[in-house]
Image (cartoon, rainbow, N blue to C red; front, side, top):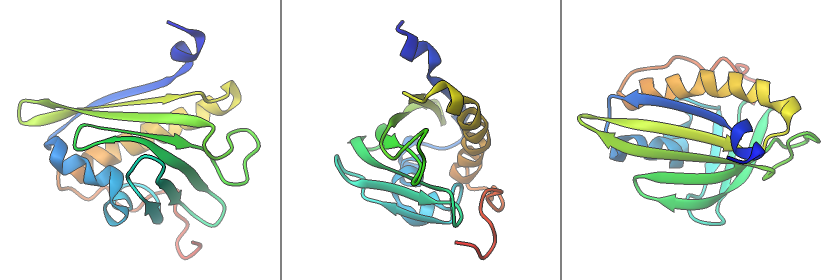
Length: 151
């Protein structure tokens, strides 16, 4: 395993929903904002935009690299206006593997600089459970990173 692979953020959760239910939460703007962000501009095809705005200062942007409905999505990731993690400088891969009546959701976030890793660990530890709640038909509640009225 390379240094880059060892430093990747890895998260896995079992979700009480099928891949066909979870996949739109990763690719449809109105479904994305149920669990992450306030506004989303998503074009889920290779080369299409991935952009999620949390508030007036925190906007993630990248492009979709691979889209395999309903099993896998890969997109680049970075923050608009960031010198440490500029748009497109890291890569997120999410795979959905059927598991009985549910799905194993695996996330791998690669190519983050060490100084940005802890904040991204904290972010994914917030958002992966929110995705699981939304996919299972629940309400994850308001996104704590969205400032009311400041988008």
